[in-house]
Amino acid sequence: MALLNKEKWMQGFGKAVDVVNDTADKTGRYIKEKEWDKRAVEVISSVENGVEEIGKEIKSAFSGK
Image 1 (cartoon, rainbow, N blue to C red):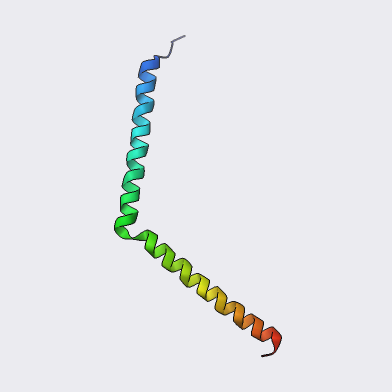
Image 2 (tube, helix red, strand yellow; image 1 turned 60 degrees about the horizontal axis):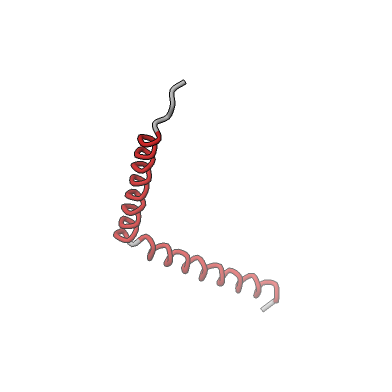
């Protein structure tokens, strides 16, 4: 039965963590560059306004106004 080389395993694990961190950094930069965060806020605001309008229409339909 082969024994695991702890040092090599830890180096491999460290490299995997580095790759994940690098990917997260690149993703964050891409989101900011493309302004997806701002676009998401705009979409959510637009949907919220639409839901409010629908709610008003439903309320007026049931209240007879």
